[in-house]
Amino acid sequence: MNNLLNKRVIKTQFSNGYTASMVHFQETDEFEVAVFIGDKLCYTTPITNDVVRCETINEAWDVVTEIMDLPNIDGISRHIGPMGTA
Image (tube, rainbow, N blue to C red):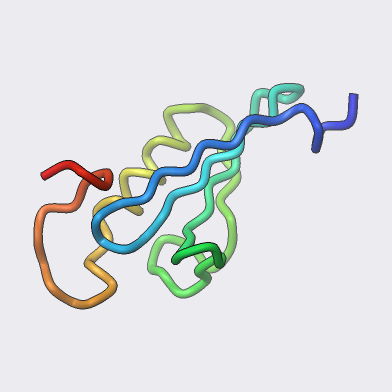
């Protein structure tokens, strides 16, 4: 089966204005994490200037946590978590 068709995508939007997108390639059991602002890839964070390839789910969740902990896009500091949480 084509690896691009055999994948799961999880997106989580955070209150800091960023969205983490995690792709799980089931055939290879590898992960890819990207930072989004709205529906566009963001290449200007200190985390990465591209997508991050991870060999394990733990590595992928570590990158997602880094995205969640980024300063707010609007520059105002406050607790950062998934949308709808405090």
